[in-house]
Each structure stands twice: as structure tokens, then as C-alpha cells.
Image (cartoon, rainbow, N blue to C red; front, side, top):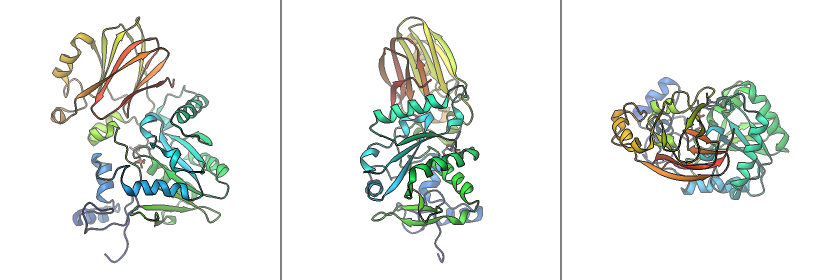
Length: 369
Ligand code: GDP
């Protein structure tokens, strides 16, 4: 290749010789990409189109070196998280990697939470959750990468904490970091070719550098892959169903103990013990919810998964992981969170169980809403 081509997903230099190494793309795919004006390396292409995660994971040396280099450079660290999948988008051990650098926590996708939820309440909740995870952000803010008008406000917050330093943006995949970076570029310049790239010292990972006014840079890092997300078990079509694109309409259920809710065929919620009370499901409006008797729930699932209970689709049924059960004793208003899919708020004390495909976590947290 005569000129250096870079992947528009992660910024790696595109190469066609070494499969399995950073920046690899097959020659045929490269030609198609060039024709379409969008060249991705194979890893980013698969990630975007099939949610097929290739080799590189958080434990890989390169990512560890990347995270370490974040602590060695003096910078403001901007950690982008998806507020719809807060637990699934935290970076394990980030507080250890950042060293003395301040962290600004940015909750993206605020557009999908109910408008009735006050921003101040959400910010308070994020602070509390961050603290529990050992992160002590200097500030917490909300944004929507899809709304260009929010970028100016976000940039102002960044500027107020930057103190003449570089800005390093980090996040796990799927939180909307690329969308956010693109919106920022549009806002600061309106032109794409301001982006320069360079390598993280001692790694094969490339960073994208967006020049700021005072000679410093806003640096985008490759997305870090988090394996416990529902996204890794579903195809592209199903991701469109489960990832909310507009404001979620909460669905309220009055349940007696001994009743079960199925969230498509992806997750299951059992009410085991307690008084009749309200349960509120916060999932994409396109995920259908079915109520049934707990006693029949196993048989109901076996009979209907792939059919009435979708996703997964009939064709995916065979390869779809079995559902694994987690039991919780509830004392106060609590969310039972199905990583990447959403959550069910339990309003009264009782005992419940949450089921998710093997590999996806179900956790409890203090109720967000
Ligand atoms: P990355 O892997 O972190 O770079 O994430 P992407 O930028 O590729 O975004 C992942 C998905 O989230 C895409 O389907 C985006 O369209 C969607 N997304 C990104 N930002 C927002 C947002 O502010 N609101 C909503 N509703 N969706 C978003």
C-alpha cells in the first residue's frame, strides 16, 4: 500500500498481511471499504456488524499497557459510560490505572431514560455507584452523543476540569464513545481531517488525537471489551431490538409471589416470596414481556423460546446459552439489572430471582428511579 490507511473504528494502521494482528483486514474487504469510503479493520468490522468480538480483551498486554500509560501521562481522564448499562460499562480497576489523574465520568445515552427522571437525581445516583466501584470522579455529567447540541455543554465541563492538560477519553465498547468523539469533532471543527493518530508508547494500539486550542489534545483510546454484556451473545438484528433508540416507556406489573416475567427469551424474573406488589420493567420498548406462573415457567420457556419468546430467533435457539439463575433477598426498593438488557425495579421487600444467558451477569443495585 502506498499511503497509510487507518481504521475509522479504532485508528489502527490497516494491513492485509497478518491475520489476527492489529489492523488486519482481508484484501477483498479493504476494496469494498475503500469503495464505500469506510475502511474498518476486521476486528472493528465484526464488532460493528456481528458483535463478534475477536481476540483482544482487557487482559491482553496491550490493553494493560494502554491503561498503565493513562496513569503516566498528565491528563484529564474522561470515562464514558452508558447509563442504560452502567454496571456493564465500568472499567474494572480504572481507579488504579489513572494514578493521580482526575476522572470525569460522562453518562451517555441520557436520551433513552424517561424524561420524568430528574438529571440531578441521576447524577447523584451515578456518583454513588461510582464510589461503590472505587472510582472517585471529580465530576459527573450526562450527555447524549446523538444530540449535537449537548456537545458544547460537555466540552465546557471538560474545559473546566482540564487545567491546560491533555484529555484522554476511555470507555468499554458499545457505550457510544465513537459516536461521542465524532460529535465532538463536528462541534470543535466541522472538519474531519483535524484528526491525527499516533501510537501508545510500547503498544500496537493507536490513538486518535484531536487538537485543542492550546496545543494540547483530546485523545481517543480503543474501546475496551467487556465480556459480560448481552451484546456478545446476540446478532445485529437482535441488538436492534434490545438496544433502546428512544425514550424507554416503563412497564408496570402487579405480581403475586409465584409469578414469572420473561423478557423476550433473553431473561427471566421470578417473584418467589412477598406480598402482591408492583414491579417496573425498564427495557427497550421493542422487547416483549410475557407473564406466566412460576410453576410452569421452565416448560413455558422450553416450548416458546425462539417463537413467542424472542429474541433469540428459532435458528439461534440451539446455540443460545442456557439461562442461569441468581437469587436475591430484597429489603428496600432495588433494581435487578440484566447487563445490557435493562432492569426490573422491585418496590417492596421479598425474594426474587433473575435469570440471564450463561456469561451475562444479573446484579442488584439501589433503585435508579
Ligand atoms: P463505541 O463502541 O463505544 O464506540 O460505541 P458506538 O459509538 O459504536 O455506539 C454504540 C451504539 O450506541 C450504537 O448503536 C449507537 O448508535 C448507540 N449510541 C451512541 N450514542 C448514543 C446516544 O447518545 N443515545 C442513544 N440512544 N444511542 C447511542
